[in-house]
Length: 441
Image 1: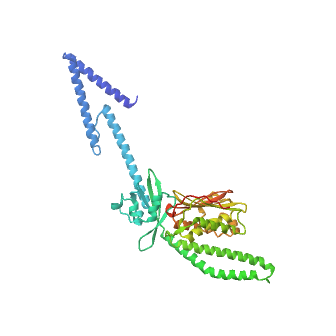
Image 2: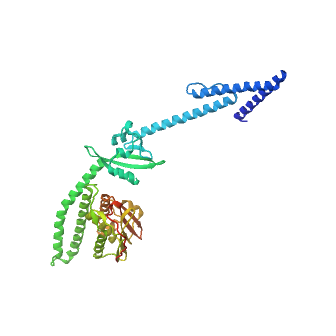
Image 3: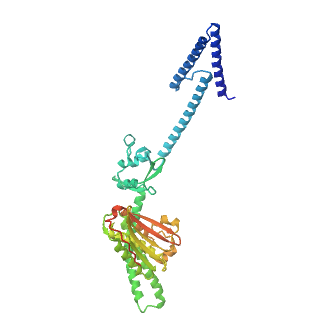
């Protein structure tokens, strides 16, 4: 029999003995019920005394010893002591874990800020306090966007897409750049990771300056070389055996000229992250012009279609928009076989304006899609060299879209073609007119 069961049997036996003794004593004095009442009153008094002792000990158990009571009351006190010890053990363990967590986060080279569902600051480590100029006395409980008022960061929070970090510039004398990334966890809580990327940004600026300067310096001598090669190629007295090598040199010089042109364009776009305003761009006319350019190629896809589902115009910088759309169409034309087709589509919905280029080319393996907008990245280097690609077109597209608050979406299936879609926010749509549908083959 378990000890707890034995205690309850003992308590029941004690109560029964009290009843029997009370009835017996009362019978001796000729009043059994009076004796029973006195016995039960004494037993109740004993129970109340034990209850008072237990209640006093519960209020002062941090420094008082538990009362020495047997029976059921002793078992209750024993259970309370065990629960208290278990609670104290878990509390100490939790405190130790919290101290270890605070020490580990304090040692991190990056800042950590914990936000609740309302984006209010719950806790932050020392590095976050140093990088974001936070104070424990005044900033705890404040909304993070009230302290970090950078428009780019506010838009990042409002957008809700935390897959990529956002880089902001601190308003200080020395150029300080911070990378901020939010990681959702728990019930609507957010973890803000802050890191100082000033050194990387300075190195990136040096790299951009070097590329821009080198491209400028290479353009003049390359123009001279191209001119002489063109003159030699047009010379009728040239040895026929040299015509092939000279033609190849001219082709490679033209390719180098295209690369330098793209490098200069990319450097110009990277000079500033400022969002451009611009004027309404007639997307339908631009798509028609791009279609003519494709059909003017010596080798082009059999069918080139333009589908305009909205007469709305796109607000932006027309040369940059033309450059981005032209690069997408140029890529589609290069990697689509002559028996294939290309479609350009423009439409507007409640999410904004969208320009898509769909081809029936070779397709792109899924593992390459996240890196397509990197400079000089090629899915198939051999095929890219054969088509004369520079590897900079999609990088230019990405920067143009960033300057217009747009995004690039890539969908592709190997062997079935690809779709590159430029998504622009609704504020980039100039005006919405009744939708029309047009197709040109």
